[in-house]
Amino acid sequence: MPEAIARPAWTYALWAGVGVLTGLGVVGALTVGPFALGIAIVLAIVGIALPASRSTAVLAIIPGLGVLPLVVALNNLGGPGQRCWSDATSSGCSELMSPWPFAIAGLLAVLVGGWLVWRFNRDTGV
Image (cartoon, rainbow, N blue to C red; front, side, top):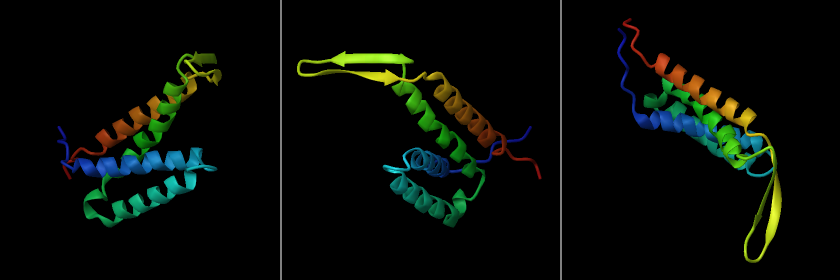
């Protein structure tokens, strides 16, 4: 039975952060995207430069990419349709999209990416 290879947790967090920032950079291309992509590039360069992070931890980019669709799905809970709100000084309505396409895409990315990290993080005995 192959045993898990011990890798520092920060390597997975680094590459997952690259995934999150890359997704944010693509989705927010006209707003915060260039800044997010710039930070993602810097983190990727750091990840490539550090020997400890040059491993299968790079696969954590995939679950990182799945975080953004999950956030969009959470923001659209109760959709499709309108959600109205009011407080003491104002009121308004927001049009919500169906959260299911975003939830499915996000969950698939997180689950498949997590499985890939687990699968390729085992000692093959070679």
